[in-house]
Length: 318
Image 1 (tube, helix red, strand yellow):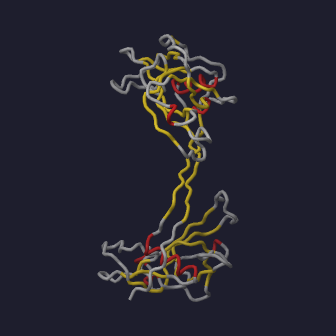
Image 2: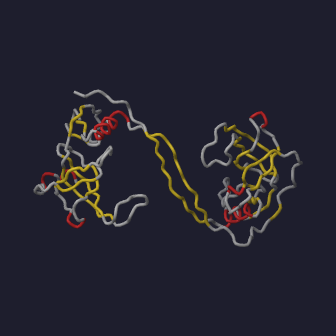
Image 3: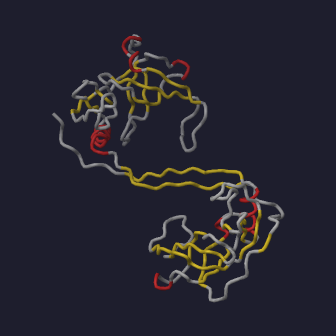
């Protein structure tokens, strides 16, 4: 019978990495121009001016390289108020996200507008670029837009796109912040781990026991809620030797990461093997978990000293 369901766990989770890309001639000219307080667009064969510029006409797919300079002033075409700016956004105080059609352009550029409140923003509002004090060749060289009461500038003029020391590549930090909820099955599993117990769930149809549980059988898809304790000992089914040190991970290389079939489970989970030289880890080796003080899960697995399990005992779990 399933036990009482603990309160469902939640935890903040951040996925973050740097995204690096090279730039073609059009994007290189655009970003280098921003560094030099110059806004460049690209003119299509039918005369439309696109800002930000693209390398291919979005209508005809024709390659386009005819660069033009637009004004640093423009008109708000639509907007949305942001009352609570998040980390990394252009302004730390409430601001408006705006689409601005720069004078001389036929498309709109998305950026932030520094305004005292939503009542100060409206479609048709005239604005101008506020340049960043330190510019490096990125969209952030435009610090934001600000209200502007001047007239519209003339049409776009031809530009060679040539600048000294052009920007040829960019690195953009990508980051996703969200709250992860493991669900009822994994909450029970994680709660048991905190008590140094390992729980799986048995499928009522095929009778296989899966660890970690997912609330449904990965073999036949049947919902599962029958909990059963497995392990804590198990058998190494396969493994790899890690020779590249991961950033922020205080583990000396080389080390071994293995798939471990816990006693009573029909699905191997993964864990680090320690307490033995990396070149002595082998398939069939019997291991047991090692918890550190205050940890919610095993730090690693170590050999038990038992004879190796026969291949037939774990071959279906490879």
